[in-house]
Length: 260
Image 1 (cartoon, rainbow, N blue to C red):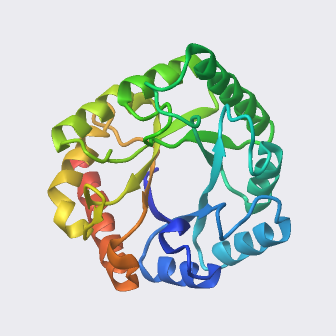
Image 2: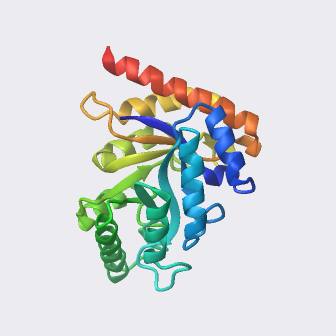
Image 3: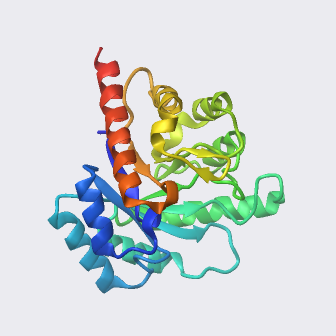
């Protein structure tokens, strides 16, 4: 029900084979494949190849991390191409971005356009059994928990869920409050430990992540979530494996606390 993984964008410059190898060696459950380098939308042959390679070593395809911006007037790739690629990949979900600007920068009309586009692509994806997930990110309509919660309520679509990640510039206490605000909508979590924009070892953020994980519990039950490592200090494979060990241990300890 609760699994660990990594985002392939963590190692944008590495090959698909290398990403798979390091993920398997790290003891994680699966991979979110990024649409920026490793799997460009429309490359259906590559999608099938990645799916086969991922599954062959016992890993899961956890998501297709697209950079589709809902409500944009122009897209690098149409959502239909992204959806077709995700289907060939065997991805259960597609990650998209909620617009092109922050919540305090958009007009009511622009916000409505984002909402309607999310609803439209979510309906398309639902027809092939794929969920749509909104990244929790600055410069979009999920830049604050208030806006993210409002957006999810406006979209009001059973096939739409939300990622969560520690927002840059907030205190641990403020981040815990954001989890509480949007917890019912959270499906996946991007895991990293930064000081502002400086990437640090996850071991330095263990205390913070214990608090985040406890807050992510819903009525003392584990949610059906994937915790995905995204970015590591110095893009170092050895650091990645250490972070993976820390994440796995955190999840194991969380499960023990819940059972107790």
